[in-house]
Image (cartoon, rainbow, N blue to C red; front, side, top):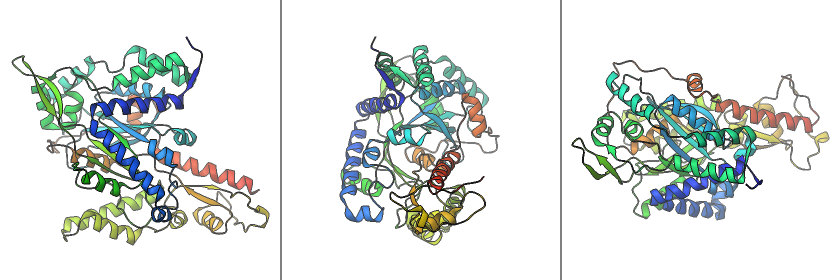
Length: 479
């Protein structure tokens, strides 16, 4: 056995690359999506107009990082499976961040709660930001599943093994040591990739159809013998350009880009779109015992454009703007949602990063510029940590440089919108029945791993940068 060690960042990069090869083999159109994404990113970087408007092509991450970046998505059926996948991802330095309840995020029946496994250390994110959006079926939610359906779902899910003992053993070892020797690393990558490969086992047609009538997402989780990569998502600098280029190639896209609109101000949070789910050949077992080929439409090609992470105040404003857009759309004035959204954004959101920072609406890191003479710089005074206005004055005076923190997470409504846009039907739900209460704390208990609040991570990153900068300026930060 070789003694060469492979650190988690290389394990994670290898995992993302292996999944991309596998998914490209299973869904060839994904390869086209990646190809178009690379074209768009290269053209944006070469465009003087684009880079000037966005403050530089690498304002929200290096071109190398953006082009290599991926997020995957998987769906699981139980607390046991969630706890096991948490161990697998921990081996790659990926930890649960954020709680997303998709059950009420759209009118479509999507009976899952979710989190995202990703690196939490900014340096690890910069080296390889691979993340996996992971959903769990809420079988006890009576709005979707009656007692008989719940019982059979839980029985079938409990009988399957998605993550074998050796995979879990190697994952635990990588998590504990932060690295594996080369032979173990190779084995971990092989086992972990295989765990998310599309199964060729026959699907019980009647049971799958029963679940699909409730929710296509439920059928994709509990109606098949194993899990699989549902989509693998490249990151692009200009999602509207990509959308148009994909259509020009004759590829059917969903109706609209999910998330904030394209406008002349800063990109915030996350914008997503996808090509429509394709018919994939599968094998079905019918009630008479015969096995015959068929097809399913459950997997699609998603792409994302990431912007600046918003603070709690910024998210509150964002939610209020989305509600205002919804209200305007309900009035039916004939405009598209993008047109309405753009008008609302212009009315409420600052058109510059400096405006976002001064109003405390977005997260930034702060640093002392190279060669700055702190002794001659005009410095504010404060009793506690410097507030947004203090920092804004220091940036305006050239004492500090502000750099936006990239939003590394997801939006429940956008995720549900992507899911819904790729479903053949809305499914069914009975809102007269009781739901099942879930929040970040309960999901943490389910997995046996603490689910981090993304706001806490962004705030800690910003605060650490402020304290370091103040220290370089010879100032003491209290609080």
